[in-house]
Image (tube, rainbow, N blue to C red):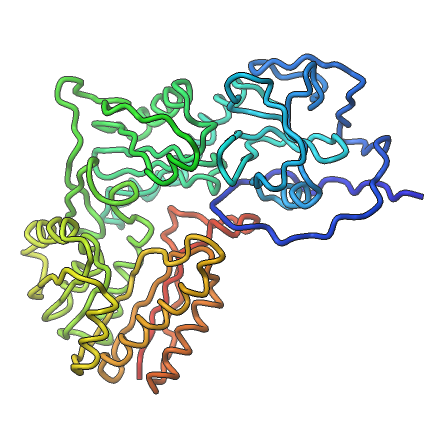
Length: 475
């Protein structure tokens, strides 16, 4: 006798970034199509239920008039029922987008036809489907849901935005899957709000309009600008964004550059330059923690910030150190870092200099020359863009940490970070421990940290927990 299908687990879940799900062996015996779970609607080919992208059907089905929708593997279905929201292209068993231009939304069902929800569809991406609802919804319902979720995401940050205890005016307002809007990033830098669309299903005028009308009453920005990620734009097949702001309070002279505050320090921001959305807001709480620990373990000492970008850690260290050196491969980034130093000169105690070049080569040379520092920060870019790159990434992390430990004075501070979400926290800590063994140093863990609270973690979606930051005392 065939086993009855297992009921859905709690299907209220958020979303996230890029990791292959563990393979699960498929049962050899297929379960009969007639099996029915009382709280699910089987998708029957025999009943032709018309599908309208703008109207919620009374009996949600994937086998509509032309079979529009996607059926996914058992592995993908189990993943979605466990709370994740992605379906990889390799797990799509059949898909009918209705011909013509690919729709933004598709209903998703398991191999038996039981509805799993409605997803944003990306026809060219490795992540083919991103579930946005566990119900069958159309475009109008999705736009309303997007607006409510974006409003909720910003409202959760409002206490920090208005807090007198936090001397910052810049936060992540929406963190994609972690805020239940897969593919949407919204960052606030002072008077500017920057939007990134990272999924094909969001690439529409209606979505942009709903985002703008939701943001404006809560944040009151001078400008809202869209800033694409070139790599994601290519992978997702996104259209080229307009060079004009999505919104500007002054349409004749739209603001695209400003200054913003983090932890009482001033940083320059240009929406037309820099990486990601322009800065790295995920580290803003770690900047302050690094400053505090440097004040404890290396007050008035000599500090080094490796991969400084525009000087985030360096400026904070310069509040408690005598001398700070920042290293980065990008001269353009170091020019912005120098402007940031000038904007904060009266708040800093250290002399600061910048070195442009490859961090690996510089640290290797300085370690051989027996350079010494009281505090070192390692904040490199993501070394592992895929699972296949993890082994090489771990070698890179070990090399950087080894050289840093060779240059640190006794009881010096090491702040070491990884933003490679394919490298787990356990793997990162193991490779730092291996570097300590090779350097013949005893390393004491003083704090273990992640991204700032405005980058929330959803346990059902491990990709949301990507940033690792270890505060270490190297004895």
